[in-house]
Image 1: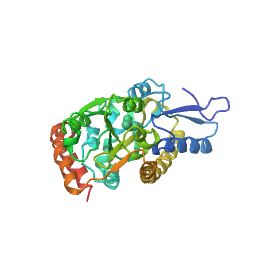
Image 2: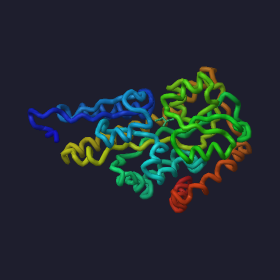
Image 3: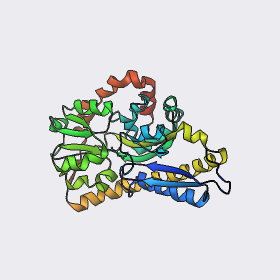
Image 4: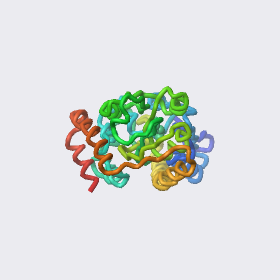
Amino acid sequence: MLVAGSTFAAPITIKFSHVVAENTPKGQAANKFKDLVAERLAGKVVVEVFPNSQLFGDNKVLEAMLLGDVQIGAPSLSKFSRYTKKLQIYDLPFLFKDMNAVDTFQQSADGQELLKSLEKKGLVGLGYLHNGMKQLSASKLLKVPADANGLKFRIMSSEVLEAQFHAVNANPLKKPFSEVFTLLQTRAIDGQENTWSNIYSKKFFEVQPYITESNHGVLDYMVVTSKEFWYGLPEDIRAEVKTALDEAILYGNQVAAQKGAEDRQKIIDSKRSEVITLDDAERAQWVQAMKPVWKQFEKEIGKELIDAAYASNK
Ligand code: LMR
C-alpha cells in the first residue's frame, strides 16, 4: 500500500480511461478532475487521463478496473449490463422526455440507490455525469419507424437497445465506440444512435447524410472506481478526491448542456448531414413502436422503478 503524504512516498496515480474525444462533456470533466487534483493534492495524487479508447475500450475498462490496471472510468450507463440489470432502466426508449427529467430521477433516492448497484461486483458508483439525449443517424432519411426496416444499426452492449431496434424491424449490432466511424464510413452498417457531441466530435456526421432529431433515449455515464482502490485510499485523500470529482462532474454537466446545442448547430452549419425533425404524429409512431420494450424488461428492472423514473418527467 502506498503511503501518501510522507516525504518519500510516491504519489498515488489515478488513471482515468474513457472512449470519447477531449472536447466532449466527459473529456472535459476528466480533464477538469485532473486539474483540480493537481491543484489541491500536488505531490500526493496524480491523475492521468486517457481519452479516445487509448488505454481501454468499451469492453475492457471495467475488467481492467477490477484488476487494478485503471482506477476511474465513466462508461455509458448502457455498458454495465454484465454487472447489473438495474441500470438498464436508462436505456428504455422514450422514458425520459429531456435531461431535466434524467437529472431529477438521478438525484432522487431511487437514482442514488442505483449508484450502489455495482457494489456486489466490486465497483463503486461515484456519481452520474451527463452527456445528453440520443439522436438517430443513418445513410437513409428516417421519418417514421418503417424507414428503419432492415437497416443495420450499431448499438452499445445493451439488450434493451437491441430490443429497441428489433422493435422497428432493424438489425442492431453491438460494437465498441472506437469502431463506429469506420463501420459507418465503409457502409458496413447503416446507422447508429448517439448524442450531438459524440456525433460531432467523432465526425459521424461526415459519413451519415441524415440525422433524425429523435431524442428517443438518454446517453449518460456513471463515474466508477473499484472498491479495492477506493477504500484503500487514506480517508482524507479519498474525501479530497471525491470533492474534486464532484466539482468536475458539475462542470462536465454544464459542458454537456452547452455542447449539445452547439454541436448540433455546427453539424447543421457544416451541411454534411441533414438534421430531420419529427412532427408530433411521426414522433408518436416511434413511441408506439418502441415503448413495448419497457414491458419486456419490466421484470429485470422493476415496475416501481420504471414508474418512478417516468414520474420525473413532470
Ligand atoms: C457510445 O459507445 O456510443 C458511447 O457510450 C460513447 C461514450 O462514452 O459517450
